[in-house]
Every structure is written in C-alpha cells, then in structure tokens.
Amino acid sequence: MKASVKYAIRAAKYFCWFLILFTLLIGVLVLTKFVPADIDTMFVKGWISVAEIAGVFVVFSAIYPKFGYVTRKVSIPGEWSEVSEQVEDFFKERGDYKVESREEGQICYRSNSAAIRIARLWEDRITVTSVLGGVELEGPAKDLNRIASSLEYRLRGE
Image (cartoon, rainbow, N blue to C red):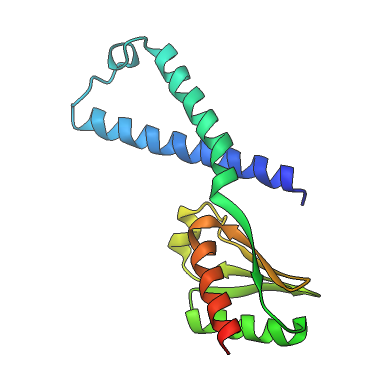
C-alpha cells in the first residue's frame, strides 16, 4: 500500500477517534447535568461551534500521523540471515509483539495485547526491513524509539 494512502487512512482513523472521544465527553457532561442537553445552549454558537471543533479535529488528525509514525535505521553489522534471527530472538524475549508476516528481507510484528491494538486503532505494526548496513524499523513513534535503541544496543553488544 502506498505511503500516502496509509497516511490518509491513519488520519481518518484519528479523526473518528477524536469524534468518539468528544462525543463521550459531551455525553458524560450531559448525563451528569454539568451542561444542558441542548446543543444551542451547550455551545456559544450552537452547531457552528460543533463544526469549528470538528475542524480542529481535522487539522490535528491530519498532522498527527506525521509525528506518530516514524522510520528509524538501526546500524547492525552482518547479513540479513544472521540479523533476522537475532531480531526475532529480541522480539521473542520482549514478549509484547508477535510475528505477523515474513517476507524476503522483511519481518512484520503486531502487538500481542488486544487492548493496545484497539487503543492504537490497529496501527501497532512494527516492520523490520533489511537495508545496507543494518535494518530499518517502521512503526508507532511511542514504541519505535525504545525498541530501536534496545535492539541496537543488544545486537551491537553481542
């Protein structure tokens, strides 16, 4: 799948996630009677305010995938056949990811936790690809920086 299509899908997922959170928040406020149930009195400009809030969500959801998903190169000496075994051992020891697929020069991992997968809108994939001089990791920035540092430390230290 092309990177631009992936980016658009991620942005759409985050827009939906923001809308769901906003709806839940407003629902809780209405149920606890902190705000009236009428949109026109809940917000200063009524439905226009809701549209403006949705506009802010569009901007944030369009920007977030740029910072939330990164690619990082890890310098590891050796051939892919040796390195791939070490990478698989590394992920097995961590225990929080499982192999989703293997191709020539690439391994994809997914989170073991259903809760994490749902919270991340099924954008939890970490892809390890063989490149000249090491491997390239692609995935959520939250995990990738920690994993890349640990992987490089472990495989260069052995």
